[in-house]
Each structure stands twice: as C-alpha cells, then as structure tokens.
Image (cartoon, rainbow, N blue to C red; front, top):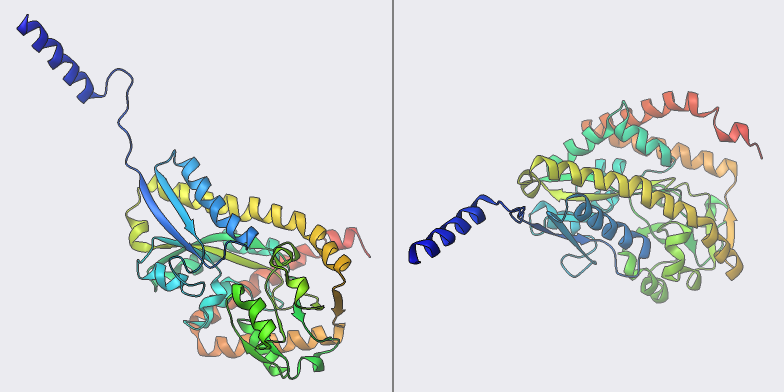
Amino acid sequence: MKGKIFNIVLALSLLAGAGISGCKPTPDVIKWRMTTSWSSDMLFYTESAKAICDRVAELSGGRLVLEAYPADSIAGALEVFDAVSKGEVQCGHTWPGYWCSNKPSFELFSSIPNQMVQQEWVIWLYGPPRGIDLWQELYAQYNVMPFPGGLIGPEFGFFTNKPVQSLSDFKGLKLRVSGMAAGVVEELGATTILVPAEEIRSAMARGDIDGFEFSTPAVDWPLGFEEIAPYVVLPCWHQPSAMLETIVNRDAWNQLPDDLKAIFEAACKETSIVDFMAHLEGTNAEYLKKFEQYGTELMILDTESMLRITEITDRLADEQAAKDPFYARVLKSQRDFREGYRTWEKWGDYKLYPD
C-alpha cells in the first residue's frame, strides 16, 4: 500500500512539474508606474494615459501592467521627463514642449507656430521621412524612449481677459504660453510665463496672467475656462496641432522582451493616433458651441496679422537652426516633407468644398 501511494504522489509531482493536464505556468507580470502631467480633472488627457495602460494590459494578456498617476502624486506636471530619465519611474505621459529648456529641439516634436497640421504628423513620423527616428535619436541622449501619447488638432486660441483684435493688442499682456509661441508674443510686446495647467485658474484670479493657451474646446470646457476669460483669439496659429508623448526609461525598456516592446508601441500608436484623435476631434464642435452659447467672444486675427506671425516664426526657427545642428536637421526634415506633401494636399477637401 505504501509503495502504491508513493508511486501516485511521485506521478502527480512529475505531472505538475511538466505542466501537463492542460495547466500552463503563470507568466511573470511586469508592473510599471506611469507618471503624468495631468490632474485628474483633465479628462481627455487623463483618459488618453489610462487608455494606453488598458490597451497594453489587454494586448499583453496581463503580462505588462501599467498604472497611471496624476500630476504631483509621483512627480510634478513639469517634472515628468526628469523622473523617467532618471529611472524614478518607468514611464510617463506628457507633452514634449515642456522640455524646451533642456534643448530647443524638443519643441519640434510637440508643435511650433504655423507648422504641421494633424494629418501631417502621422505621415512625417511613420512615412518616408521617418521622423520617429529623429525623435528617438534626441531622447536617447536622456535615456528615454518616446512614443505617441495623443494627436491633437488645432487648439482653441488664446483665452484673454481683454479683447485682442490686432497684433498691437498683445502689447503689455501677461500670457501663459510655452515654446516658440512665447517668443512670438514677446516680440509683439507681451510677457510670458509657463505655469502648470492646474494653476491657470488661480493665476488668472490673482492677476498673475491676463491670458493663456491650453488645448481644444473639448479639453478646455471641462476645466471651466469659460468662467475666467471672456475672449478667445483665433485662429490657432500658436499650435495648429500637437503631439502628446508616452515616454519610457530606456533601462526599463531594454529589459522588456521583444514581443512586449512591440505590444507597447502598437498600443501607443493605436490609442493615440486613432482612438484619442477620433474621440477628441469628434467632440470639439459640440464644445465650441457650448463656449459660444455661454457668451465667449471670438476675436479673429486678419490675414495681414497671420502673415506677420508666420514671418516671425520662420525667423525664430531659422535663428535656432543656425545655433543647433540637430534642430536644423529636424526643421529641414519637416519643411522638406511639407513642401512636397502640400503639392498633393492642395487638391484636398478645401478644393472640393470651397467656402
């Protein structure tokens, strides 16, 4: 009897060790933290970060699990890049334009005035120009891997507490604005300050700023911006489109198996360039109407003003390119692409559907 029992126990042990009887070993789960630049009330940006986390977990079968944290719970809104670069956290969700103080080239991967529109980003990054390679080359210097985090269309212009009907009206204003757009309005006589998005309302209330830019109508409305600024200056020259980013510490990235790397990249592209863009752009018209019904007054700059802004932007970009060879490479890549692409694009919908 004892021998029989021993044989049964031995057999079961061997079966368990061999993984027979249809049971598979439980895969190791890799858990990452994602710090973001968004407070919990920034619905679309916060949802974009969470959607990427959810999609990675789904596609990986739960092998790679990301948890997104709002600004200030791990790192401040403007400290995300440094936290990821140093390995304090494995990944982040933010906007490249915040890091221009590190190197001006960062702004070319976020947005500069009168530059690429929404669909051009996709083609420049993943089409023949391979802008994604330039993006990764820049970030490699900081031990970071960049991926799309959300593709945004034209913003809703500048919110101001005073009417701005011409470029001369910018003179004397204190504006919350980042990147090259700050250089443009400073040349027009404004002073600029960059405050985190969650501090915009309090900065306006204190009189620290007279106006600000942030995002599209669908993002701006839930933040209550209609309550603090009666005017919006259009068109959106300062940010005709923008790319949010999902960034990963390179040491953490290099530890992933190849299939999880592919899953992570696919999730970022799918969620950011399809789901986020479609959802956000699909709701902007609804929220624009809300602003108009509330009483927000739209100030429209004329063609002469726009030509002047373009002139300033081109000069500022050329001056920066003359000082920074990498900036010059990226700027040339984008300009060459747009020059060629727009010979085709000009036959697009605005020719089919004239005003």
